[in-house]
Amino acid sequence: MRIAVVSLFPQMIRDALAHGVVGRAVDRGGVDVQCVDPREFAHDVHRSVDDRPYGGGPGMVLKIEPLRAAVRAAAQRLPEGSRRVYLGADGERFDQRRARQASGLPGLVLVAGRYEGIDERFIATEVDESWSIGDYIVSGGELPALVVIDAIARLVPGTLGSSESAVQESFSDGLLDWPHYTRPPTDSAGGVPGVLIGGDHAAIRRWRLREALGRTWLRRPEMLERRGMSAEERLLLEEFKRERVASAAQSED
Image (cartoon, helix red, strand yellow):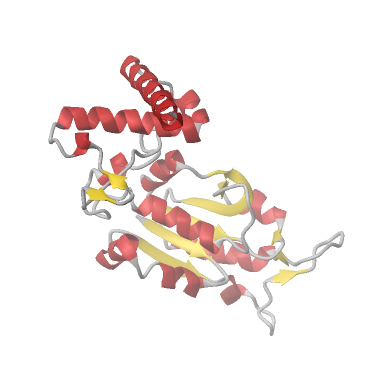
């Protein structure tokens, strides 16, 4: 997977990608991330990349000329068929589905915005789509770019130690992840569910699916509405609800 990040703070990207599983994937060459700084394409003495917005108002706006040149230079380094994406709060929601789609692309240009925003003419003519990582504001597009890179890189074969890890994580099947436990089996905070220790793989699969359904129902019910459920899953969710009610009643006694 080849990714180019257009950013005014390229070292921020490089430093973050020096760690963890994604850092190892970069070192091994499974994921190639390059950075392009728009300042390299600013031709005035101050290497200006922003200016005051027309119509007045606070903040500065990134200029179209250096940004356009930087994106085109980044795209030339990537294979044909690569996509150009602007990262901004007003973009479409980036989720696991988009991560899976992006992981199959030959390449990706990620444009990290800054300041008050970007000249709208650039967005209209130089990018294929816009993505947002959530309904909140951060200081620039570098953190969203790193989130996108991490989510995509985890789906590239060889990034994770186990090929099953990416399949079993939250959102991969439209559900939140089930609870996880490790040693010791008992602690002052409680014990590990016995089903996970018993060695019955069919029972473990059933428990994990039930807990994933229940956790999704509790925390993100809209995901279940979009996803739908099989007959088995409906039975497991009803079982989860009954056990929850029984546990609450027992706690009140």
